[in-house]
Length: 285
Image (cartoon, rainbow, N blue to C red):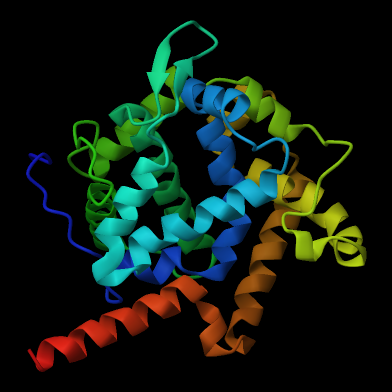
């Protein structure tokens, strides 16, 4: 399929992406997504040389999350949000550890970052108790193409269908990703981990820091594709796998007790309001 002619169309509340990407439990997959991104040589170089990621990693991750969620949930504003996210990366360029030049807006580099979000969303759909049928997986992939189109970049690296995406994914795991400086540094426990935001400093952060330092990376390590774990030389025991599965089983069991408004992110709730407002305006114009 020719992807070069796609006109960006915002995703709506009836899409699988809307349902899955806005699940607040997906925050638990942040480390998995970040580790896979950091294994790309160009992204690693950007993190190491042109980012404040290592000074305050959780602040960097949480700052990025809102705009990326907006590309899915900003309704009619989503294409503008996508272009803003793209333009954040305009000045990022340099050389990787092999001396190869890169730019953050190179289609193959930017698409890899997007691919990790899509793949983690698919993993999350299983973990959170709403696995997709084969047809729904194809539908979710087509939605991911629309999602990516809103960045306004070349569609050249976008695989034509889900089968081709899986081949692309395997190629990245086996032929492109590396144990880069950024990902290895992310896996090392640091002596200091600053509070993501000023308002969290003090007793609140003292209580949260041990869990924030260790649990997300442990979950990320467990959810990495086996090929990525092997590439990084990481071990993962049967006991750890049982503990991880028990954690997600507990989340699934307790989810019905969560109040409905808290079952999607604030950005998703805002998107619903914007779409409803746009529909009301359309009725009177």
